[in-house]
Length: 149
Ligand code: GTP
Ligand code: MG
Image (tube, rainbow, N blue to C red; front, side):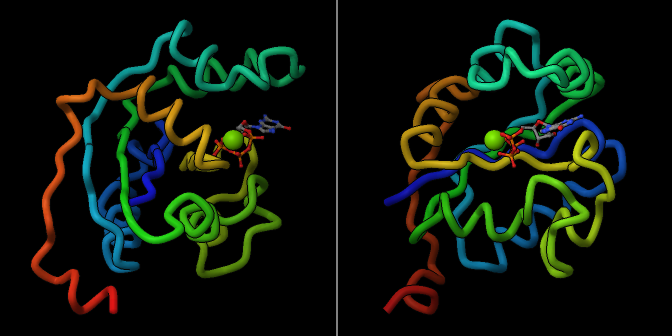
């Protein structure tokens, strides 16, 4: 089953949005398979955002992502990567529709409270980067018959 890496960034953690963000993924029907509160360091972030290291905003992105704890999570379910991005909304919160996490809770691209993998391939890389194998748990939620036909 498809898995995606979703992180609540330091601003989302500090603003008390962890419960709200977890609730949205849970209510959608996805299964939580990994979760931890962690601090990111420069080495990890340079791998995580490898495609952005040459961008002018990268130093700001680094200090933003190192400004406090991050909630790292892995969710599993049908089309989880693409639909996870739909739940988050557009990168720039001012382009995010109401009803999305960024559309409802953020106003600036540099404080957009959540991260979500943008492809299945990147999801696999990010999950391996942020989690050890033994930190991911497999189980069958009793409600699965009510979520999947
Ligand atoms: P993530 O889910 O965090 O990866 O966001 P994304 O995939 O929607 O966007 P992208 O990977 O292109 O950028 C990663 C993060 O860098 C964004 O979520 C923003 O926090 C930050 N970022 C992107 N573009 C800008 C920018 O123009 N200015 C600033 N300050 N930050 C930016
Ligand atoms: Mg991205």
